[in-house]
Amino acid sequence: MQDNRFMNTAAATAVGTDVGLRAYMLGVYNHMTTALLLTGFFAYATKWAVLNVAGLGQLMYGTPLKWLIMLAPLGMVFWLSARISHMSATKARNLFYVYGAIMGLSLASILLVYTGASVARAFFITAGAFAGLSLYGYTTKRSLSAMGSFMVIGLFGLIIAMVVNIFLGSTQLEFVISVGGVLIFAGLTAWDTQRIKSMYLAGDSREVAAKKSIFGALTLYLDFINMFLVTRSSCAGKTVTDIGINIRMPMPHVRCVNGKLGRIGCDSYLPIHIIKITIIIKLERHD
Figure 1 (cartoon, helix red, strand yellow):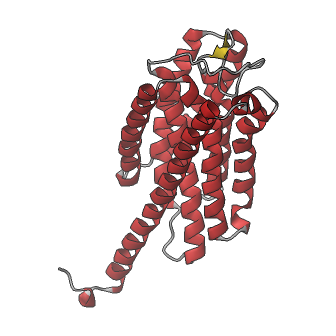
Figure 2: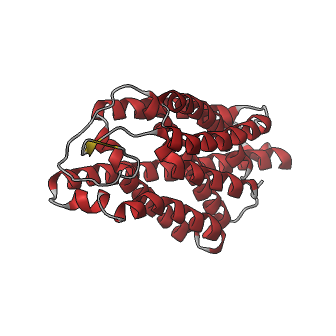
Figure 3: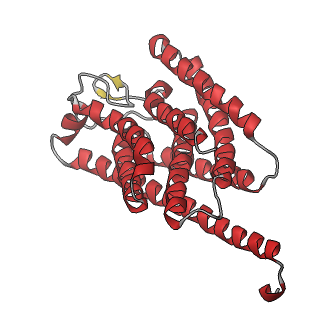
């Protein structure tokens, strides 16, 4: 074991920076994982409530409340990304966890439409891909800036294609959007990890480092959620579930088929992709 007493100043500083960077990135992944657990818990809890509490499904998905459920994550991330530098790290962390819970409410419709097995398959595929891509972004010495810029352009193109497909309703274009979305968010995951790593400064105070780790966690959380959604859309195993709700308008994220809950289209994930664009712009200001 190396004795730090005989290290020169530069070597000791490098070791300290390395230890601090690992602690910083561990904080990023811990916050992200906690938020994902909250999202999953509230999504499943909402599904259970809709299936077991009379009238709740109609209230959530058959009234204007559905628009609040769908758009609340978008509004909250605008506010959080704008105010995070003006709040304490503890408050930012708690609001991020609240955001994860709200996202769970918004995504609960996926569990009402798709089979549990297909959702689990998409989740594990996403988790494995995300882990590998994030590890690559953390360890590679190659700059991913050029690739990242290309992926951002691709994300704008993806959003435009989704808007167009709202009017066209093309299944072929929807498949292209799904495949393109998987590739785009795969690239963004590696790039974002590298940028979050580069945000770390050994001289940061504990408070500043904590807020950076929370914002980094939000960035990777959105990469994971977006990758999961487009992976879910490209997988087989779609189903139509009758939960006895008389829906006059489509649920958020869900299309209606003869009064039953129908399939989820890629274009319905548009608000969540817009959230990702917002975070990319915000993260650019840290570079």
